[in-house]
Amino acid sequence: MKLTFSPASPFARKVRIAAIELGLIDKIEFVPATVAPGTANDEYSKITPLKKLPVLILDHGDVILDSYVIVEYLNEIGGGRLIPGYGPRRWKLKTDQSLLNGMLDSMLLCRYEKMVRPQGSLWQAWYDDHWNRAWAGMARFENRPDVLDGSSFDIAQIGLVCVLGYADFRFADCGWRKAYPKLDAFYQRMQERPSVKISAPPAA
Image 1: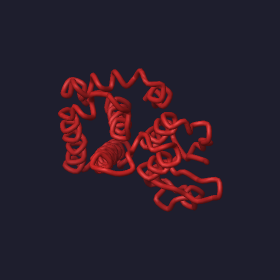
Image 2 (image 1 turned 60 degrees about the horizontal axis):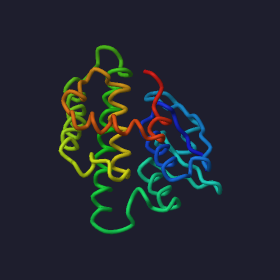
Image 3 (image 1 turned 120 degrees about the vertical axis):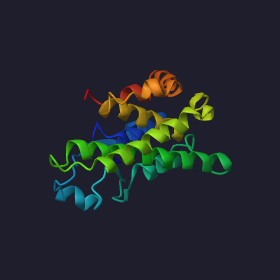
Image 4 (image 1 turned 60 degrees about the vertical axis):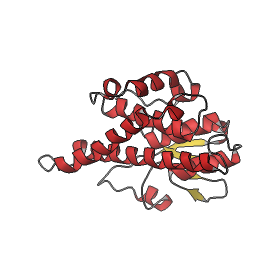
């Protein structure tokens, strides 16, 4: 299998953590790819018209996207440890994963709004709205002891690690650690996991 990725992508990081936890990392070839708003990449568009990272390319050529589906695929072939196959917990975890993916989407849009949009055309209300979505999501997980206790490392915890890691990476002055001390304690504990250490983004 091949995975298109960037070391800075929190979505690719989620897949990398899952692959390590499931014992599949050695079966994946990592293919660096660059995508950016307003920048053409015709070759990558042939793989996925959405130009999103990551994409998993199977040995027979089929393509799986996006990170949400890739993790489910890896979970299935890797023994189902990260997402249960049935029952109430499955749907709770899938809902958590959707929320965390949405938070990352909003944070990425904030990043683009500040760093990519032409000078003088920043839409501040739009930026604030998306940032508030991510911030409110953190507030919700601050009060989720079932996610923060660390008794099992599942897709919700992986997604939360990627959200908090991306906040550190791209929004270092946002103050999430002070605002959410339980999330901070959770994140510090998670730094001890090899999969989290290995997949950390480069210095901003």
